[in-house]
Length: 593
Image (cartoon, rainbow, N blue to C red; front, side):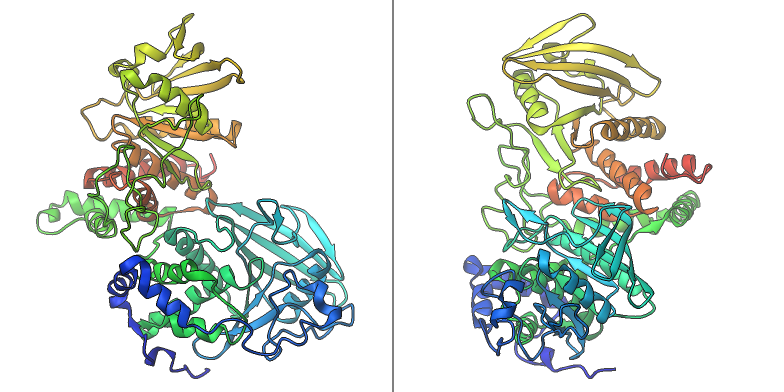
């Protein structure tokens, strides 16, 4: 095994247990410590790039300022065009082993070279950190086939056997056949889709993506080199490689040295990690990685743990010890430092970055559902955008409209693109209902809106009402209103099966309107909305991945809205809902119902 370097023995070494203290210190005086560290790192062309700058290779480079160093560049041994050049470098991990290849997003004329490199280096995992286009600019040419299709590049045939879309990333499984050698291999691709060039994603979402990647890599019997690219192959690529290398090493060493490792990477490929924000993101993502584990379990394991926990409570042992759910909730509370943060006038707090407390980040604006009125003025309404399991902004949690907010509420419905609205209570108990919600054969005029009922369908679990929202000069909007008339206002929990029936109907509506959002309302936009949204996302996870992680699902919505799932009772209710769902569906061994 390669010998570990002394990176973490130099000045700047941080013990894992001291990461948060260090981050807070570096964040003082408008991130003065981060700026100073970043500016000390060597930058620019530190080594010869003669091959990449040759005239015959210039049009193979995506950018005119980014070239691979000669001493670490990947050399194509059997290029079909008799040219060994590709804009790619080997990157060492902390042990000095060539663990990664950092490269640019392929251009149209370099796609064959890209697959030549994948085959030559026996790559089984590709990490893509860019979209094909960002704005109007091409960032990467699509080098893979669409789902269930195949494509030919040179003597390589690539078939896309599986593609799964998540809130912030897509995973693909390719079958690659080398026609010339009559050999074939499987290659896994992880594409992060919510990371703009020179920007940063939310730390927790990058960590979830990284853990998904890690689980795949750890499952491989042969640990092959990992190919990472964004557009230029230096900024986002460097940030991800730094996270992966430092996290793996920190698990055994108990320490990290971000500055030294970024400096090392820059001697393998120029300008790895671009800008102070990406540099800070390495710290933030490492902190999130070390302080909280993802804990997905398959359906059978979840039910077994749930039943054991129930037996534990029934035996009375809870008198002396906390239940497993209580232990997890205590941990969740410790990971939610802004839980008691005051809400701004918009009714929510900002948790944009998990490692600073600037005025901007605590202003309560980042996750607000922004909609405009007819005169282009912002509508102030207690509504927050949440992730679903498959969309970065698939759910909106909001409070019931007050009597003087009915028009604003309709602006939110229209402006947010919601086709399904779930009221987690009885509409007749909400005083504003009579001002905007039409009964049969009735039309309501609400400011500049007209609302008409199409059809009302009651069931044992909920009432579904299809309405039309009209506004002069705009297209009519069809909305399905799901009313949970079984859920009394003075209770936190409700009949599990009835809640699951509402979730099932909401999911059915989503399949009919895949580009729309789900709007979920309660008295304050948090109570009841929390367990409902956690269960909604957990069921999506079960259907897509055949596993569930209620802990992480709860964390993700608490980052957007800290007062969601604010009690042990609500957290237990999340578990009860998923247990009920599994008990119903495992009879048929079919999670895709």
